[in-house]
Image (cartoon, rainbow, N blue to C red; front, side, top):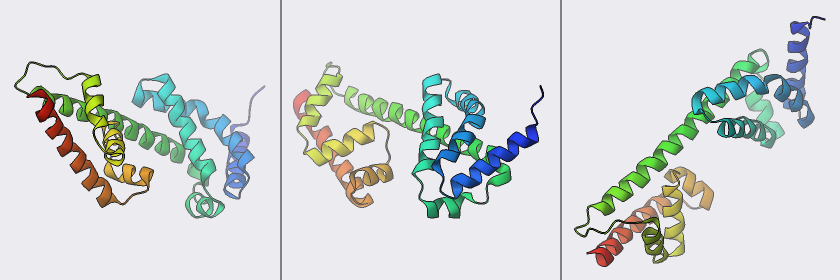
Length: 187
């Protein structure tokens, strides 16, 4: 029994058009058709099955969260290039994930190297750092923690519903206070 690929492709495009028109259930057909391909692509970038599954799931969740107006404006021209569109979404999400992971590593590495310059032979542990963060006011502590988790200032300001400048200034102040606390307690 041979499956007519053109018929399957037409069904998926019809499902996509129904989704763009507001039928959330129609996205299930698109998901089922493209899930394996998108998962394989995500794994190519991330080399981690669970992260790859999360990326593909996030893409479809974000599509579902779009309003009808957003769908119509942003997705109505995708029809014939649906697979390419979905692959680009997955690729970009994977690259963002890798970038965030690298930012987290760099930030933690920079913090540890900053504190390792101390004249004392004391190695800073995560516990030491956690204790120092408790001395910061809650907003500074939250922003610094999000920064350490790899979020940039734009993402932090959106997440905490503060302006970009407030985020930037608060982060700068938190870093300065942390350095001062380190100098006070470790020298």
